[in-house]
Image (cartoon, rainbow, N blue to C red):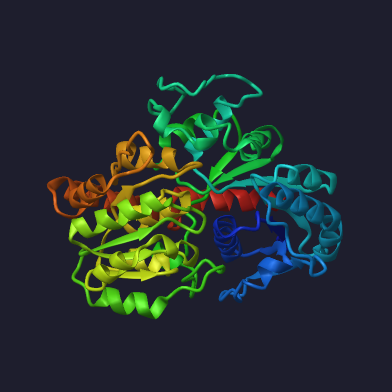
Length: 453
């Protein structure tokens, strides 16, 4: 008699901002590609309205209505609003979505929504915390948790030595550690994620084994972690999922045709791509220095300047740029990084952008702003050696000479060739991790097997 396959239904609860939703959508696609599992993404009405139909059609979306009430703009109020909204609705959602063939077994939740693990356990579900940042960052937060006082950092310039990590200077630490007075509520939030180490049934990381080997080896001595990354559309990696060309959510309208046409007219490796993500806001002085540094480099450059930032660029600068530059409010980042004309990526070093550059083999000029970005920049320049890091002045502003010099290193000097070789090495290793039988692919298979019991 043929043994009946036990199937499962996985609920996925991302924090409702683009940089957190997109990796969890991609992870959901990889889960459903394995068969014997249903995946439903839970999000808010306001996010659903901006989300295009997922091309694969394999993931179901469950939208939580909020009676035309707009989410609060304040970060603190938004966190509380989202917590209350999910808490009120999760029981009904689980009851509605669970059936005898595909019982709801697990809630995969964003690691910053730490309260979700208690909701899951109360409903008899397993809980898997999904980390959208690096493993290294979690180790820093684990050891420098102010509640545990394992390592004290008083804001001075001494080096910090932590298990499995390179020696870290003040400039390498996340802003929530070394500038705690500026972000009290966010600081509390990021350190609260340590709760997941005790309560969650699994910890899922958007990273891969060889990328953070020492860190991951150490974490595995502490808890049940599974690396399941890099989570980017498979079109740019192993291509196992049909038509998987994009993340599935964009809160900005990209200028696709304009960008591609402009890049097509440039020589191989001649363009510097400049983007600081959807949240970073540069001061007027820094925008001026960046603009001047780009012009001094004498390279072609594609610069993403959000509409809210355009007023920081002078008319004089804009008029000088027409021959060398294309400025857009948003662009399809993966398509741009994959284009043969792009030879360098000036980035704020957000984790998603960092992974994308590594997966596509593009050397970086690391220009971190806040949060985890200084730590990512440390790894880009010193550990993975896939880019150079700018040096800021005492006022925190990176001057034009420094910017132009770093661009020239990547685009013209011999060191740039080494950086390109290293970037291509990580591209190959990233592909191996998600290919069938690779470390991340095996971890996803193991995760699914655990759900079938």
